[in-house]
Length: 342
Picture 1 (cartoon, rainbow, N blue to C red):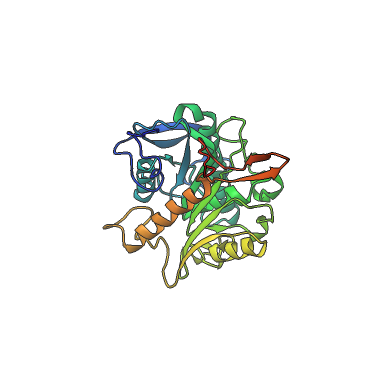
Picture 2 (picture 1 turned 90 degrees about the vertical axis):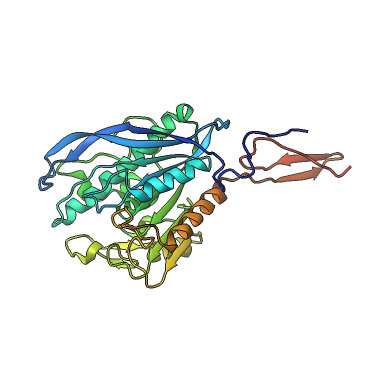
């Protein structure tokens, strides 16, 4: 008989079982050239340290835990890793046993230039990948399960997350990223850690994608998409952000989900009729008052989505070879208990 007296492992990831967490602030996960204010000349850049705050459960005895990287809103011209909604996700998920991180990524674009806005999204994509590579490189230090690093983004941060999953090969790079100056490959910026910067799961809150043709049949990474059907900031369907024709038209959550499903894959959706942007009550990531009734729903769906994709699954098959031989098909198992009923 084994008695677990410290951590109720059968409740982790679904309940706040850790009473205390610790936060390491301003961890440098990379350095990259950022567009200098007033953002009118793409060749005018300055080196910028890329920072993240890392949240860790105190007293966890597991060697490696799933991780969640959060990217804030702000239209690629504002916002920080201290956005209240991103902090809330990081804090709450760390209490449940995850390693979490809220990241700053490079900001700045010419809001009157389609090319500049495309480059801004691509820089954010590169920084999100740099953050994932950093956690993989330091997996032992922070106790990260490198097979289960998720990315969550709100608004602009959801553009970062969407493109992390679906703009994942060099031949999908936008032509605007090759000149004035060349921004480099997907994993050629921020740091030089030799890992893939692609996440193992996507939580996109009111985000959009450059083109749904980026989604192909082999793109089976799990995705959870939340969006209000009346979003006037990021289109739920097809259109330009803010209705600004200077921005390139993008494909919102409804069309992304449609493409995923047309290819025979699944997307988890939470589409709310009549609701607008950041419909859980934030304004650029901060709550003017307090979270509204949608916050708990979005959080609970995120919590369930992540756990459903990395939870252990028991399984086996057997063959009659004169004696019965059993073959383990369990996923993410750390211990096994066999009961043959005798």
